[in-house]
Image (cartoon, rainbow, N blue to C red):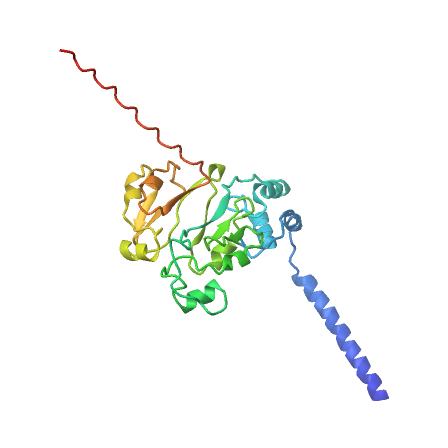
Length: 290
């Protein structure tokens, strides 16, 4: 009995001593945290999506508090409204940022890109991409398994059953970038949303030469360069047999769309073009009477 009692006393004393030591060490080496970090974190939406470039909302809050200005710091989920709240809390100026949106750069519909095989495995783009070219002959296009849909926390992407391609809802998209990271073919990118959500995009990432690209998909870019010649703003470059439109230079004139022979360039959210008016026939000259 004495041994048990002594053991209990020794253990209790050891625990008490350890607690005192931990308390002293914690007090000695404690790091004072700016209370504004908690205020900023509460103002953020708490999605922890990583679209801001930081590990989560609290990491972004710490960056906002420590930064001299809010330039380059943006919560894609909360947008300008949230950043204005953050600026008010910190007494800083909110920097206006152009809204971004995810764009699926593939128009290989079922009609343009018919199936050549059937994948009998787990329906995952990542797995299919690692195994082989995919169910179509295009080694660059969308695999259609919906990894991007599963990655989106906001229900902004859905698969179109008719085309077999993912579609982005501009109103729901927060440009968090999760879908961009989820796509193993890198066909999804973040672009400027544009005025009235209007954008002009080359809906293809196929880097094969013209004939093989066209054989794999009727809507493929063949790298002919006609769009580049039509552009007056140097917004289009052609590299590795593929045209790309720089959204920072594009003026939305739509000349490139009309010049593309395969229809690979799409003008998104534009009103339909007005049909060309038929040219008036020239009045026939009256025959001179003899």
